[in-house]
Image 1 (cartoon, rainbow, N blue to C red):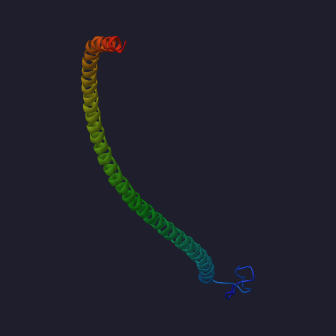
Image 2 (image 1 turned 180 degrees about the horizontal axis):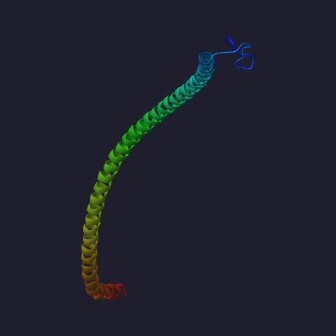
Image 3 (image 1 turned 30 degrees about the vertical axis):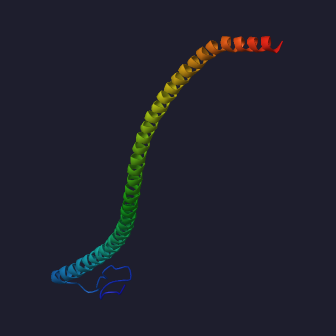
Length: 159
């Protein structure tokens, strides 16, 4: 700090050796008051500059946080778009599988109907075969005595 006229090293106003007038004393006091006020103003300006620097730093931090937040939001948005696309693909696949399943159910029902028809046909064939077998058995039963008679007559002729 620069020393003002009439001040000692520690900032006190030096007293003059000769007698001073009341006007001169007031002037000295005013000079001392002005110096104190200048010091106060200087300190306040330094504090203001310090607060401005802190505020600027906080604003820079907020800007960085906002940038990170925006980047994170962009990632989330992109992930959501990809997820919606994947869901859409799976929905299409699910719809196709559902159609295929319904088709298989119809095929299965058709196969059941065919099996029922086959079973009915088999039953009919079995019934027909049974009837044929029964008729053959009856005819064989009728032919057997005749064959025995023919065989006996053949034996009689042979003797």
